[in-house]
Amino acid sequence: MRHRIFILFLLVGITLSVFADEVVFRAQAPKQVVVGRPFQLTYSVNQRSRDLRAPEFTDFDVLSGPYTSTSSSTSFVNGKRTSSFEQTYTYMLMAQKEGTFTIGPATVKVDGENIQSNGVRIQVLPEDEETSPQPSPQGRGQSSGQSSSQSSANQGGSVSSENLFVRTIASKTRVHEQEALMVTYKLYFANVDVAQLTNNTKLPEFTGFLKQELEQGEIQTELEHYNGRNYQTAVLYRTILYPQHSGDIKIDPANFEAVLRVQVQQRPRSIFDDFFGSYTNVTRMLTAPGVTIHVAALPGGKPAGFSGGVGRFTLTPTISQTELQTNDAVTIRLDISGSGNMKLLKTPAIEWPEGFEPYDPKVTNNFNTTTAGVSGTKSIEYLAIPRSAGEYTIPAVHFSYFDIDEKKYKTLSTPEYTIRVKRGAGEASSAGEQPSGVVSYTQKEDIKQLGSDIRYIDTKLAESRKTKVESYSYLWLWYVIPLIIAMVLLVVLRKQIKEAADITRMRYKHANKVAQKRLKAAAAALKANDKDHFYEEIERAAWTYLSDRLSIPTADLNKENIASILRQKGVAEERIQEVMSVLSTAEFARYAPATDHAMDDLYRDTTNLINNLENEKI
Image 1 (cartoon, one colour):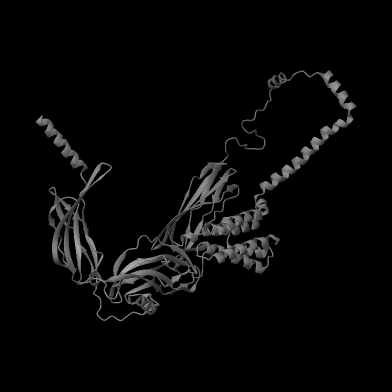
Image 2: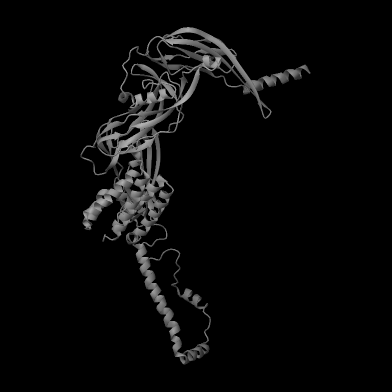
């Protein structure tokens, strides 16, 4: 009996040791502290421990500690017991000088085993200056400090613009066209109790920029030394901007609303009011100043394949196969990776040799937006089917961009591919050959065998029927009329087949019909206030219509060759400028913010342009 009890306890002990919680020993301290101000450094472990060995606090004074405390809890949920335990060691430290310092890991013993914690990195900020000059509203991002302070005072509490303001911080103020910059709106406050930040904000339109917002997440506060003082700061909004033209572009001021908790000076109504004081919430409007961005034009000498790419990119080409048979598909894939204005990169064109039937390229974007800008990969798959045997050469594809680091143009190229196409199975190698699967009877025995299947024809019955037909001579029309109808249908069918084979003519003929479908979809998106879908349909309507009318593949279509072809066809310069204006507006508005009025104007202009081009002889 005793042996059984011993074995039972042994099994329980082994089970508990296997399923015991993993030991977690963690050090925590503020990321930023101020010289001369005490702060806490805590070490916590989720199991009972002893013999704490702290690191040497070389750059900090130990004011007190370590203080040891423990806490435990037990809960029952659905009959399941859950317990937790935490032991904490707390030090009170104070920094001796400013800078960034690292406190090494500590160790404790848990069940006789040494457990090591993580280290912590602390930034030490200087003390507040005793007599610091008050920064101007423009310099600190508060353009209406006096009026806001008076408004707050009238509502029961005074908060100066020196203690509460918002800055507009541009990562760069001098950039090139399409070069990314980040604009941050940051709240600064000291000796102020900010209860909450409301959603009542008014951001600028960022006219002249392509905007890419950054995910904000939960607002976090941290210390920052600015203009001689230490402030609690919080990032309110961040966005990545790409300037679309050269010159000085002004970003207008932004407005934010904050709710402050201020103490009201009034006669106490009770002993509790006298002791605790009375507080109220005050709404405060904060204005972040505007900023001017100086945008330099891209230098001259642009390569022939340059389509507006600015950043840092690499090009990785792959081909599915170089030896294949007719009617088999070959795929070329281009991966453009890097960072920059990825969303505005044009799709390079491949010049397929005669005898290949190409299809529209498939584009897959995998982008990631960070504080450094937009990065990722643009993958383009080109598919074509060879219809004739032979050896073909696919020329190299060139992708040019402006390197923002080296401030010069660069061109990336793919290799020149040689493709060998063999004749597929079942295809005739010459005009006189019979395709496989077709039976040809050339032997006399075959002919005899075929004749044995023919049944005897009663000639007397045929003569009797001939006599009846002759007696009704008008019945010949029953044979002639179907023959005429069949010939007419044959002519019409051959014409339709010929037109369907002429893909260029069919696209030209149905250009307006396709464009009207796009415009109809854009009108529905406009009514639903679906801006992304609206701009996509508008842009596709304009570009697809011009591609079909001018017989230019979509991959080769750009504003320069559109204007050149329209001039060659005798289209008036006024109409050409109208085309350029609609294309530029549609392309820009798809990524830049716009008002509902601007969307109505763009829809009307695009509709009028397509209707006017229908009357042109192009």
